[in-house]
Amino acid sequence: MAVTFDGGVIIGSDSRATMGGEVVSSKTINKLVQVHQRIFCCMAGSLADAQAVLKTASFQLNLHSVQMEAPPRVIAAASLLRKLCYHNKDELQAGFITAGWDPQKGPQVYVVSLGGMLISQPFTIAGSGSTYIYGYTDAKYRPHMTREEGLQFVTNALALAMGRDNVSGGVAHLVVITEEGAEHVVIPGNKLPKFHDE
Image (cartoon, rainbow, N blue to C red; front, side, top):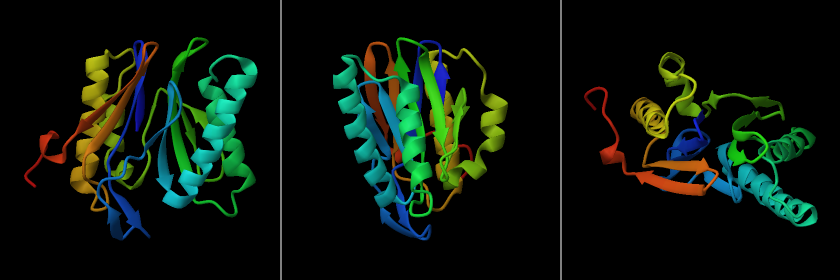
C-alpha cells in the first residue's frame, strides 16, 4: 500500500511471496523496489514478471535522468511502468504501486494495474491482503496526515491484512519518501499491532 502525507509519501508491504497463491516460497522478500532516488515501487502478481519490468524501468529511468540532467518525475516512472505493462499485457502478470516525491508535484501515489491502467490516488492498496482492509482504509484515511499518522495508518493496515490473509505475513517493510530522501523502516511481525487474538 501507499499513502501521501503532508510533505511526503509512505509505501509499505509484507514480506511473504507465494507460488500460485497457495505455497509460500519466501517469508523474507522485500517487495519495495527503489527505481530512482525518491521513487519506489511495490510489486504484485508474478514476482519474476515484476522483477523483469522493474529492472527495465530502473534502467530506462536512470538513462532518462542522465539525458535530462535531472531526476525523473514520479509520473514519468508510473507512465513507463504503464507502457511496459500495457505493451506486454498478454505475457505479464504484474501490477505496481508507484510512490515518490518530486519538486514539481511533491508526494504522489500511482497504481499501474495488470493490464496497464494508470491511476493517481492519495492512497491505494493492492495484493491478496487488500481485500481484508478496504473498510479499514476507507474509514481511517484522511487527507493531510502527519508523518506519524501516516506511518500508523500504513502499519495498522498491513498488520490487519497480514493477520487475516493466509498468504500475507512476515515483516512489514515501509519506506518514507520526502524531499530529503528515503528512509527504510522494517517492523518485525511480532512487533506489529494486534487487533484480535491470533
